[in-house]
Amino acid sequence: MILWLSMNGSTIIITLILMFLVYLAGKKLIKQKGRGCENCAGCSGCCFHCFDDQEREKQEQ
Image 1 (cartoon, helix red, strand yellow):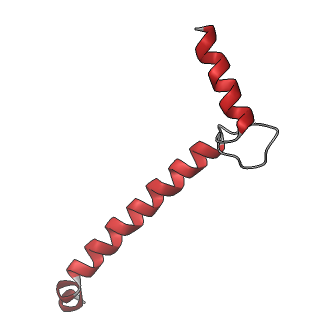
Image 2 (spheres, rainbow, N blue to C red):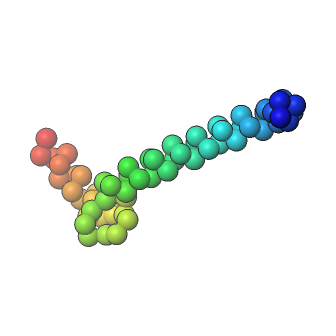
């Protein structure tokens, strides 16, 4: 077992790094999806309705 781990150590490290990066990307996507509007399913805040709301908020400040 120790021999197998020593021979595949770099592969294991790269796999862990890639899994962590996928986790961060998924977390970011979930956070972005929560900022969407009720008019569009899954717009992630990029539709015209969300853009218009953001511009209004900027002008009010």
